[in-house]
Length: 324
Image (cartoon, rainbow, N blue to C red; front, side, top):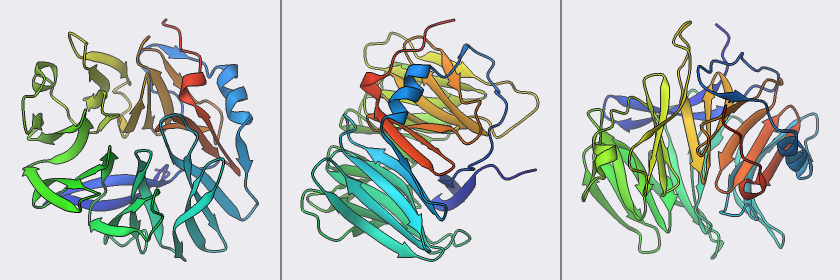
């Protein structure tokens, strides 16, 4: 079976492995697996992405991997001449975060508007991972914070390893383990995570999450939590009486399922061999049917990557996907 996504595996918990997407195909899009409401890619979305596109040379790859809340600042990963560079870009400056050589990989980039967290592996087949934090305000050198990919929000980073779930204050450089489990995400300024197929938290856990049975991936923008449950994608945010089923895929023929969800505002991007974007408000999902046209949500931006083109546009400028 053709390899559709290149992965780096990082140890998240003793006996468990979390996978992060390293690279995506430039010439392939799978058929839609949706069993729920599907809409075409709006032309207005394509036009918005085209207005802010970067065309890479024949021997380089450029990918937008993170953005701040309004997409005015982005993190861009560029690979050329066997050098991979992670750079912060905005209207006023260009700041290099890190550069690596040869087969070394930079991945798992997250950004809260000031702090950047990301991971580095010396080789795709090497399971050794180092996770760093970088302060864009002070523009110093990246600082190692752990050995497992992190999420970041409001100056705090979180990850899991054999000790449990970590909550790290980036400014104070203070780390504490909040409990056993894995896959932490932020809800407000607090954490929720997975343990034995259930959500856990330090304090009171909303009943809608306590009753959920997540079976795989989890993501959050600190307001909305999304998770996979079998072949379905579910979500809950403060103010909703119940959790909602957002999207589903066909169970036959069996594929990789729903993986790598990312949520920001009213949009969730996810992968099932190729890319999908779901509108939380309507429950409609857009599947990219064009080869090499992959869409992902990163912070306040919708990003496109594909053959020799990288682009991003603010999510708040996108039209909604209408319900079926």
